[in-house]
Length: 232
Image (cartoon, rainbow, N blue to C red; front, side):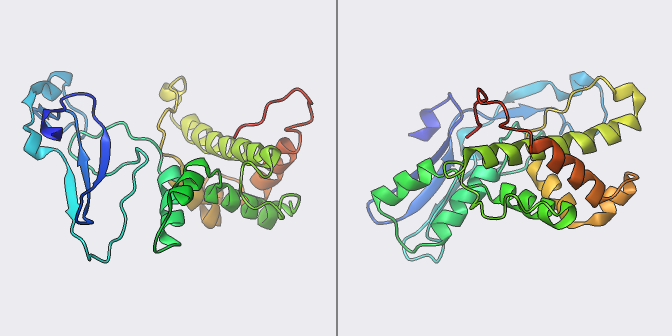
């Protein structure tokens, strides 16, 4: 069936009557004349035709396998020679957390997972602010956007500021790229990696305490305006 689904490209999960579960990508793959890796002439990446449906990524897990679930949230699922535009993996990571915590799930459990707004990465930022800036204002927060939209928004702003701080420091070393925007969606991984190592801040001529203190001071002002709408 999915071989005939030429458009759009979708991540499809399915369950059969025997209890097997599977993943299949619909849509049409593209064959190119080169991999797209490295600097090369633009014409070298010209399309060379459509890939056969048999090349579309897929997996099937038979009943009784220890792997009891599959999950997808448009995160990077595979890596090929020409790359793709993927979403970040934050949502997929949270879905995996939820499903891994239970051996079975009801329809109501799935509904709760669909509406879940807990952010493990924002909790990591909260802990980093507490450690390096003594900012314990948010320690009681559980990471859920619905329980405290204001704190959720403050951590979102903190992530944005931290990301931009790093990008701008790197950009300053390459004046020719100063006007280029940073649009890559998958930045959470390297942001969280930075929080774990003081050496990254030292390499940029500062320290974690200085950056954390500046960010904490800034985000405390988020929500001061009664007309602000929080991000959830």
